[in-house]
Length: 140
Image 1 (cartoon, rainbow, N blue to C red):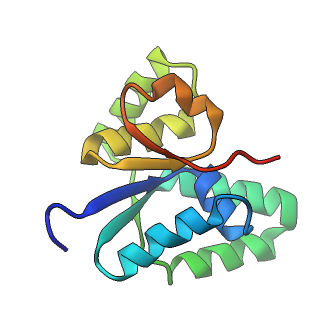
Image 2: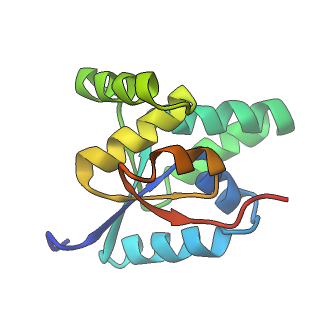
């Protein structure tokens, strides 16, 4: 992939929109298609992956959560682990902005790589001065 390729970060809102074929799924799918072609990179913080897993398991059961894990292994998404540097960056963001701790990881990754966050979560309006955001339609 070329150095000028686009980098996109998914939060739980974006991943769930894609997985559940909700409003915004097409935008996420377009970014995944770009990643498949080597024209973009799509990242998902491990903390946000875990957030999606617990939501899916709580709402649809453990079998659906396991299906999601298997599907993720086949998508052109790179899961970003939470090392010390990322944890400290997320903690710093959470201390200064009224967003969820998991959301702070998505912001921290976006800042770290200079990427664009895909989300429809209005809570991210609090940090739109820190990162680039591609807005997905909000759930109804």
